[in-house]
Structure formats: C-alpha cells, structure tokens
Image 1 (cartoon, rainbow, N blue to C red):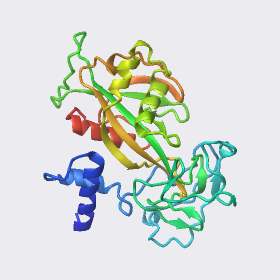
Image 2: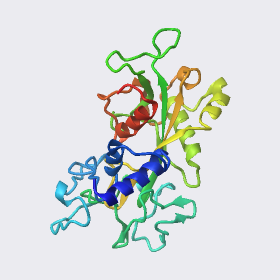
Image 3: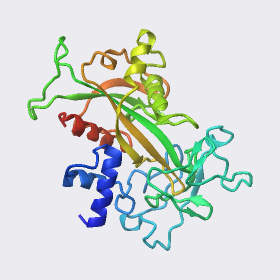
Length: 313
C-alpha cells in the first residue's frame, strides 16, 4: 500500500476504531480502512439502480467514472426530490429557495452540516458527495443537503448455550458465537442495526438510546428503565463516517456513528423482552457470522465488533 494512503488509513483507524496511536497496525486493518477513503472506496449500493421509493432510474455510473476527478463528459443524472420532504420540519428547503442560506461545512444553528469525511466541495450551489457520482441529483428522500447524520447502536450479547447462560462456542473456530439485536426494516424488508437519524441539537448518545428503545422495545423499558440508562451510558465507538446507502445522491448522503454496547453477562439487555416498534417490522437476537446479510454497510460495521470482541465469524 502506498505511503500516503497507509498514513491516512492509520490515522483514520486510530480516530474511528479507537485503536490509539501506539503499536503496529496490521495490513488487514489498514486495508479495511483504506476502502472507506474518498478516492479509493467506490460505493455500489447507490449506483446503477432505481432510486428507493420511486420509479426514477439512476444515470449509469461505471466503476471507472465514480470519482469526480475522472472525466465523464456524458454524465446527465436526473434530479429527484421526494414529495415527502415538502413542509417537513426535519427537511431543508429547496436548494434554490432564496431564504435558504446554509452554512456549509459548519454547525448551522442546530443543524450539523459538518462531514466526518472532511470538507466537502460546493458545486453549482450544491454539496458534492465526497465519494463520487451516484447517478442522481437532488436529495431523493434525504432531508438534508450534504451529510445526513445517523447513529447506529450495535447491541450485542454472547449466544447462550443452555439455561445456565454460558456462551456457545462454535465447533469450527473455537470462538464464542455473538448475537446482535437486529430489526427487519419495514421500508425494504432487510435486516439492520436499529439506528436512526440524529435530531437537530441532539447528542449522539441520546440518539443511540432513543433509537434502540423505539425500534426494539416499542419505547417501553418498563421496570428496567434505570438499567437501560446505565447500559447506554458507556459504549465503544466502532465506526464514524460515510455509509454506502441506497438513498445517497450526488448532493446528499448518509453518515453514521456506530457504537457497540455489549452485554457480556447477558443479564442486562440480554434478557430484555424485545417488541418491534417505530420503523421495525420484526426484531430478534440474530447470530452474527459470515453469511449474515444486512442493510447498506451494516455488515461491515458488525464485522468490526466481531473482530474487537474476538468472536466467531
């Protein structure tokens, strides 16, 4: 791996994965980080498809034309703005609204327009997706121009092996089997981390707890409310950055902070009665492994948790 790329990957690995600045960083870890660096990583979920919840087909974007630095003279993406955005408090006005004067790359009042990726370019009055072309302009169904911030609580426990609750060990790897609290999204039917959007002025820690309660416990912690508060008071940040999300456009994109909350004994959230709520069709404790398919970039996020906890994959 080239020197500058490796240096950038190491810096991001320390900042995102919390590995610290000391000690050697493995080539596998550096390679994984390099895949999310603009100009190296090529998103796929937001290219060459019909835009979600619409019949608008994206303009074709081949691999060799993803990055803005690559010439694509014939690029003519359609503009799509979902009607669901009109009049919503959580959505920006139209980009050509004369009263809309956002402070790009800054905290704009209570709206955070700062990207985890770094400073993004403004072209023709619109923010430019730092990871390249998506085949569609406008915001699609996303509320904000530029970065749309989400928070993903990766809540895990060891899979119990019998009534005594001791962790199940996988016979092939000899490692403990990890389970995550997963929801089935109502909008697309895919399984996912129970995350959601960060409200204006809201702390990410509050979003993480709120989204978990809304989507997995139907907002009712009952007698365990105090334990829930304590459990979500501390976690390990797993990832902070861009998400290869099917809703992304040239002008609006998803970014997330993913935090792992692990119940090592299974005595806290491991014993919660799970009830699907909010945007979830179903919720369950799901075995984590190589064959698990999750929404957007969620599988990559969960794999980081597996590596950190040295669990079976």
